[in-house]
Length: 423
Ligand code: C5P
Image (cartoon, rainbow, N blue to C red; front, side, top):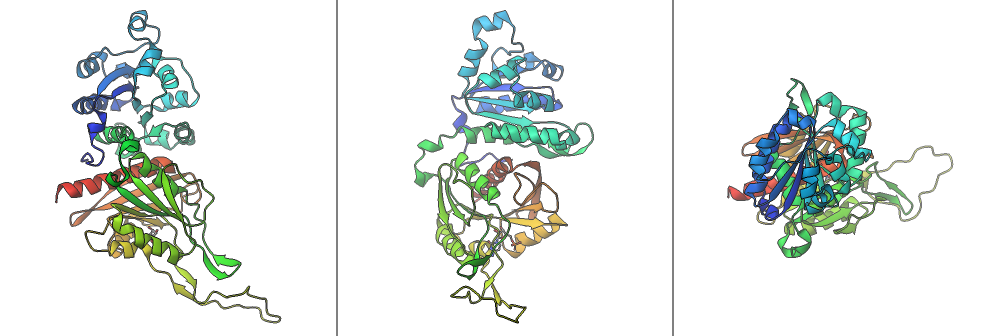
């Protein structure tokens, strides 16, 4: 994957990264992670768990990092140099890649029975973690619970990716690629707060349901909680963007750093979206927009009529907000990402939506799965985007919406940058 221009690895220059490696077959990829960080001008100190040493030797990682590799909490010689608390304080970021199911479970419980778990508790810098395990292990409710808890505890969970696994299985659980992990790290360390607004990519996001009045006290709406759109807004801020969230009625708090514009109806959302989209680099249509509205909302409360058991409402179609944004002409047209909630043949319908609405990327989820999608904290998705005349895709395993949001924003930003590079 191309690294992003908006968030180059330059953010890593001079940064001190503590890299924890645990016992997964993906441990060999930590060598590449060290190289990428070093190439970007960062410093790396490595901590290996006992099990990790069965997969990769301290000597290899010492040669690449240029620093002695720490393996034990109770090592008098190492502690006499830089003690573990000093090491935790030294770090500008702690990155654990790969993180096994066991390590994640121990982190969730706050155990401190080896050097890496102890450092994880002691480190107050940003903490990122890239899980890696067999697909059945990752899908297990315990792993899902633990990943959600890590997210809740402030860890940025990167991936895992889906695909072929070392054990021969196919599915979610393989560690994200080193480039993706280092991209995420660089984004996390981008000093967005010091970048003037005008220099940050502007991201406009629609979220939540719309409310279509029938009379002054009744309306048509849907089940959307707004959680996914709000998670996208938070992820875009975290990635250093300036974010405007056009929100239907929801009960969520506005994420820090987000400008929120409240709307009720689809037409209000449409007006705001078309007003803001021309200044945006990225537009994400995450709202569950009502397809229809009452043709003539009643001016007064609709009364029951004695002896009449039916009421006929005439509905008219609402504007398709995202299709109208996607129809803007260059140079005011942003990169447009839409959502597709499907109950079957997800890839087919998502591809169809990509071309029919002229979108650049579609995030499709199968809403027939219990516990995922509408209202829940978790989601799984298939990302489909244009790659020249073809389409490319990547599936995202079930994960907290906050983690999925980072993946979607990261993917969209890198596609924007790779398009800019080829122009
Ligand atoms: O057509 P459908 O509702 O399945 O498409 C979903 C995508 O289109 C979502 O990105 C949604 O936010 C967007 N949409 C829109 N305006 C509409 C209907 C859907 O922006 N009127």
